Length: 514
Image 1: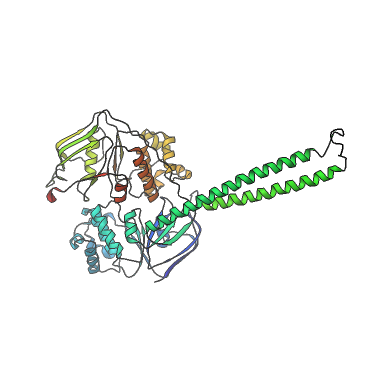
Image 2: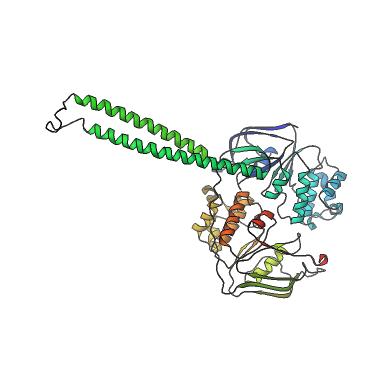
């Protein structure tokens, strides 16, 4: 076991308005199973790249060993080849037999190594690259969001696999995965960086207690500040009143006054003004303490959405409905019977490739929208309510570009509402001045999410809306859906999210497995 020591680390991107890291110091043991948590855009992936030596920085990062990063970059040429033919290009020190052993621990058959990489599912690709990562020779491993786009079975395999490993940093927003796999937490707070022992739930409980204590201390400081301000005002008023009496007096009304009284009044006024300055210093100290207390509190701002009420109770009706692409041997899924009523929250569930996203795209098509890509042939009955307004979040963020005003104009959005939603999702104001293509993947997903929330709709159709979205924002979305109760049809593999919003799960089974 060795240590990674970070001392006075400062880093910013060229042309950026603010620092990603500024004079931060901490240390990590390379034997830990470390979870890396923080808001989107706070620098998690950037820190992993700094550990890899890919970016210049100020300060020092001391580590005697080597690091390996997941996911490995796979080129377009390699996508056409079986993984067995280019494993040594990605990780020169690995041996294929070790990769096969690791694949068995991931519940994957070794035959996927000999099929063209581009024909594999997201789960199969992830398993190959994870098996390759852990087949190396003792490197410290950096794992960046391994479960994005994976179905539930694949996530469970990855969770079991990582829970039996150690010596890694895991960046993930999946609370279930973090609880099962880590024993320490590295947290990018709002203003500081902390390292704690325990899994995510332990950290969250400690965080809530810490925030509650800080809020209570803050309230105490505020009360003290109010009292000091009142006392300072009274004393200042007394001093001003006395100061005004130094010159000029009525001998009939103040027979005991004389010209020599002026120096006495001046001394008394000076003493009062000194007391006012002391109180002001105490107020300044209390305000500084209050700001220190509140700097890391995670306040989850309330989000807004405006669900519409349709004149029909049933919005979608499917009976023995199936989809099949030209040339395919069988439909994507077994015939499906489903009704979507107003107020329903329905999660489509099934293995990668079973047709969940395709089904959502076909429903958009029936609702009068034009989804991208080739549409399959239909069989069975499908009906959507007439005049249905749908708000859509696609799975992919590719193609997002341009400025925020241009995006709002292109999508017919109220820019003020849209920017307010992004601010509540923890966008800094400086982000609005950047082009969208410069955002992190999580920030791009928040752009799509805010666009959907800003659009009043009868039905919200979301395809994996939480990919790359940070934990705190997931909690905000859960609270919004619990409060607003929109009609929602979605695909999402985050188990806790589905449970917390009370979604009904509908399984899309492969026809051959029915």
